[in-house]
Each structure stands twice: as C-alpha cells, then as structure tokens.
Amino acid sequence: MTAPPPRIAMISGASRGIGAAIADRLAGAGWGLSLGMRRPVAQGTAFVQAYDIADAGAEEAWVSATLARFGRIDAIICNAGLLIQKSVIDISDAEMSEMLAVNLHAPRRLARAAWPHLKASGAGRVVILSSLSGLRVASEISGAYAVSKHAATALAQALRHAGWDHGIRATAICPGFVATDMAMAATNLDPKRMTQPAEIARLVEMALDLPNSASVTEIAVNWQPEGKF
Ligand SMILES: NC(=O)c1ccc[n+]([C@@H]2O[C@H](COP(=O)([O-])OP(=O)(O)OC[C@H]3O[C@@H](n4cnc5c(N)ncnc54)[C@H](OP(=O)(O)O)[C@@H]3O)[C@@H](O)[C@H]2O)c1
Image 1 (cartoon, protein in one colour):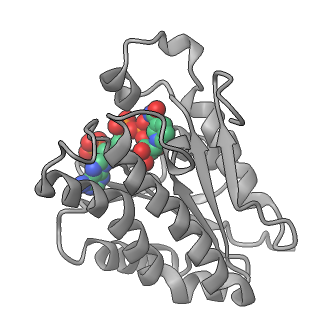
Image 2 (tube, rainbow, N blue to C red; image 1 turned 30 degrees about the vertical axis):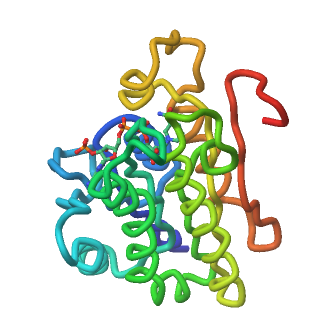
C-alpha cells in the first residue's frame, strides 16, 4: 500500500524565533514545508522561498512556487510579525502602515492566494500568529501593536466563516511574551520564564491536526497570570 502524500504547510517568517520552531516541529511530524524568508537559508529538506512582505505580489509568487514544488497546499501559518512599541498617538502614519502591512495585510493576501488550494485540501488550515495583544490592550506603548493584532485575530475569525463550508478551519494563536528576539527587544524580563517558541509550535501542530469537527478559534497562552488570561 502506498503512503498518502505528506500534507504541505507554508510558514512565513521561518528564519528564526517562533517560525523556525514551528518549522522544526512540523518537519518532525512529517509535513512537507514551504518556508518564506526575507533572506533564505537552507533548512533540512524544506523548500525555501524568498519572501519579503514589502515586495508587491510576494504572496502570489510564493504560492505559485509552492504549488510548482508540491502540487498542493494544506495549511498556511502566518507567523511573520512586526512589533513597534508606540502608543496610537505617538506612532507615525508610516510606522502604523508598515505594522498593518506585516501583521494584517500580508496574512490576508496569503490566505487569498492559497484559498483555492486550501479548499481543494478538504481540511485546509489557517493559523495566524496573533498575540494576547490581539485580545486585550495591556498598556499605552503596546497600543498600536494591539490594534494591528486585534485585526489579525479578527482576520482568523473572518477566514473561519469564509472557509467553513469548504473544510477550512482558522485559528489565532495568542501568546504573551515568547522568548525570541522580538520579546528581548521589548522587555528585560528573564526569557527563561517566558513561553518558549517550541511550546507555541506544539499548539500550532495541534491546531493543524484537530479534525474539522473540533475547530479552535483562538488559543490564549501566557507565562504569567494576567486577569482572565
Ligand atoms: N515573541 C513574542 O513575545 C510574541 C508574542 C506574541 C505574538 N508574537 C507573534 O509571533 C510571531 C513571530 O514572532 P517572533 O517572536 O518569532 O518574532 P521575531 O523573532 O522578531 O521574528 C519575526 C519574523 O518575522 C519576519 N518578518 C518581519 N517582517 C517581515 C517582512 N516584512 N517580510 C517577511 N518577513 C518578515 C522576520 O524575518 P527576518 O528574520 O528577515 O527579520 C522573522 O522571521 C509574530 O507575528 C509576533 O507578532 C510574538
């Protein structure tokens, strides 16, 4: 009996941090991987594509290259993200536009480009790396980022509605601080106490593996007690 073909996942921002941990985890679970990176570097047997959100048509080009390599797409993991720590009053229009481009527009465009192939999968999956800042506004300087991440959380919900009848399920993963370059630049808290990238990767794998009848809309995850989170 021939084994079924591996499921294929696209992961944006797979060069480091949470994206690299997700790539490691899914490679170990037998997924075929298409990794999007601004500066491509080889990662095991994965297919690696130059992917910079600033480039026009980047999402369409990456989807085309993935199809040419694998012939199918079962999941997209929208992980690339940008944190600019400024209040909604202090942030410039250009900075806000850049943050929305990375945290909202690029995931929406990637989902749109991959949509027919996610439908064809019958169990297509979209995972958006949002944030606890996509569920609450914790402080003044996280305000602008929180606006962009609330939009990312809403995007996951909107995609869930749009894809439901086609077997597509969308999940927003909403962590507090995770021990990566992003958190290190934002705080001087001890990274050993924070959620680890590999722990987020476990949650992503679960969101991908749950059947169509057990869709999880949002996963809030924290390393410290904080109100209801
Ligand atoms: N770390 C946390 O505390 C935390 C908490 C909650 C949510 N998150 C979210 O989790 C996701 C991953 O975060 P992380 O902590 O792993 O961040 P990170 O270490 O700063 O890595 C960010 C990733 O996004 C990529 N990226 C940024 N701008 C891009 C662009 N214009 N085009 C293509 N790729 C771009 C980076 O590529 P380069 O390597 O080329 O720069 C890198 O791979 C993000 O969406 C973040 O908002 C993080």
